[in-house]
Amino acid sequence: MKPFLIKSFRFSLKAVLIIGSFLTLSYAFSLLSTIHGQALPSDHFTNGQPTIIGLLNSEMFMGIIFVITLSIVAYVLYLLWQLHEVAVHRSQYMQSAHANLVFALSLCGLFIDKLWWVLAIIIAFTDWEAVGKAISRVINSGIYGNKKEEMK
Image (cartoon, rainbow, N blue to C red):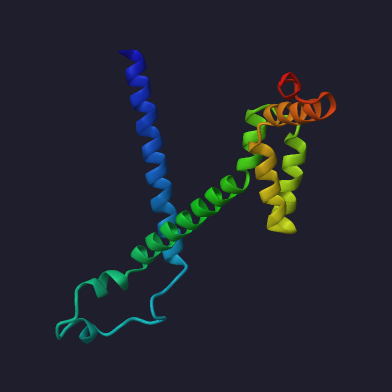
């Protein structure tokens, strides 16, 4: 029962902190702006205008929208970085000897040309043991010949 209460308390604390920081940031950004630079006269909101204009005219609402937009942009940039680093993560997961090479090629792909990133992906996802065995088989058959052809 006690671990459940501790988990519940931690979850509640995290939720309160996240929501509180979100609302605090929204309020802070709402203080930095004014809508249209002036107060709109009340006759703009009559004669069939939708009530959403009042919401869009609110500084707090625009602060919330600004924080949401910044959060989405930051998350998308984070995902793009994760995609860019997929070769490095793969080579580290495979404990490949090529991890430093893949990291260097990945950085070259970021700053110089995207072709280096493609090369890093190819190196990270290639099964080098299978490639080595296939090359050894080709060399062996070239040096010693094919035993099956000699038996015919």
